[in-house]
Length: 199
Image 1 (cartoon, one colour):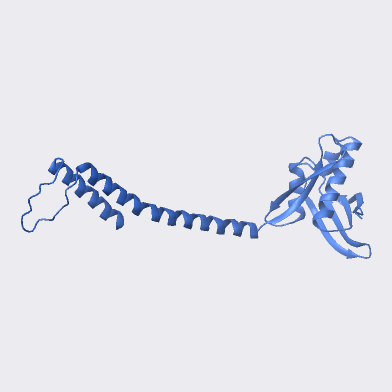
Image 2: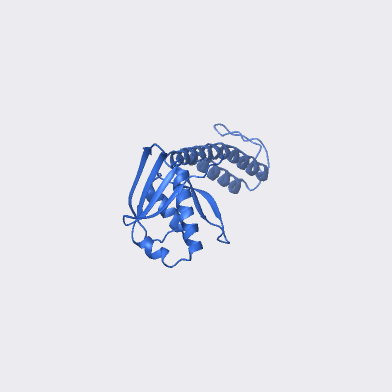
């Protein structure tokens, strides 16, 4: 509605400028609208300033609404995500580095997928089972991986295998605040790790 009024106003100004040829006559007859004397240039500048003033406020409102809706969507996305830490080999394969990542939820499958992105496990490695138990020794994790992990380890040197086991163990122990992890491949025991005492 407001845009229609503005368009009509601009059209009227344009017609007035072409019809008058520069200046408005000073004589006024009855029932005519009195227009103050000003050059067509002044009239055009004043009209444009008026239109620009009206346009600025709605644009700011629209931008404010867009920002608030984007912020609300970001908050929803953050509320539905879980942060976790992934440990992986450093460049020289003599230690571990870590980074924080996010996912919809924290699961064993999520952690294995993240480890696969860092070449710690093969892309086709699956979680066969994962349990978390409260025992006398503390929180104990039992992780059973698919046979593809065995084939993957078969291509590695002993040093690389050690880094892989440390990466998997550290990632699971850290994210589940656990004390011990037992890793199996297709039901066969492979590795056991105890969380380092940081004290």
